[in-house]
Image 1 (cartoon, protein in one colour):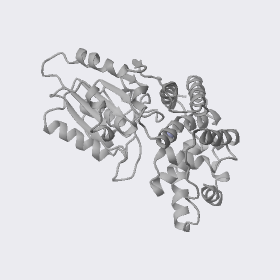
Image 2: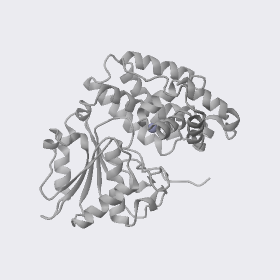
Image 3: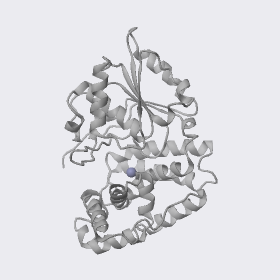
Image 4: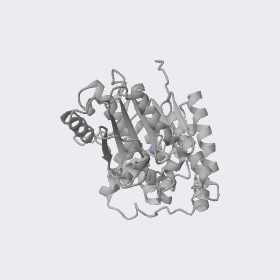
Length: 361
Ligand code: ZN
């Protein structure tokens, strides 16, 4: 077996108000008077007072990322072109602020500015040759693990390939984990996204592939998730702090772990119905009780404790063509499915079985 180096984020600030550390961090980087920083910020914050807390200076460039849309290779290439056109392609740092899309955009832009070429040339494993621009990640939503993972998910609209730049160079150089920033997330979204890390970790722990450090990250992440989602109010200050930690740990686990059945079925929903990832995971879980009996029960307990809504019946009474599409876009995820059920997973997940599972959602 080929040995590969495991890397995690090397430095981070954590705790309420840690966003204030950004100013000093950037001052250390801005050694010349003409030094500047690029920000990629979730468009949700466009007219929000978070912006007034940021040390943005007139030379800096702010790029808003629409978190309702997927990160595409085309968009990343457009940002690079724009930065070159306005002579802002040599920043001293890139700061990504927001959910998964803003963080992933920061990572991709950072790597492309030093490696050259187009985003699609780096979709895959270990294709990034040199370190990117110094990158700082500031999550404002917990659960995707984008803050600590070694990838940035991008879709190539030309061929539909959804694959990130999996590389140690994609890992943020510095994080600021400030739970104050997740205070205004809508309740349902907070739950769906937070559960992403819970699902990832239980799928990984129930799978066949083992990695001792990844398992430890996953176990602790699940422990933190349980504190949050079994509590009276998952959005209380201390709970948002636990949730941020859970997401960070879950992201650390991702590099050396595989998901199982929930993510492939979730991907089917996202491809066919454009259901957002976090919500799609929750809907998929509703039909996977036979594979994850205890976890499914726990999931419903958490839904009840937090009084969130999980839409039902979204795959009922669809045409055969839709079921075929759902099947194709789920069964394609061979690695996680084999991790969950073994190499002969197709003997269990026949077309009829997969269709039956979708109909239960
Ligand atoms: Zn996920």
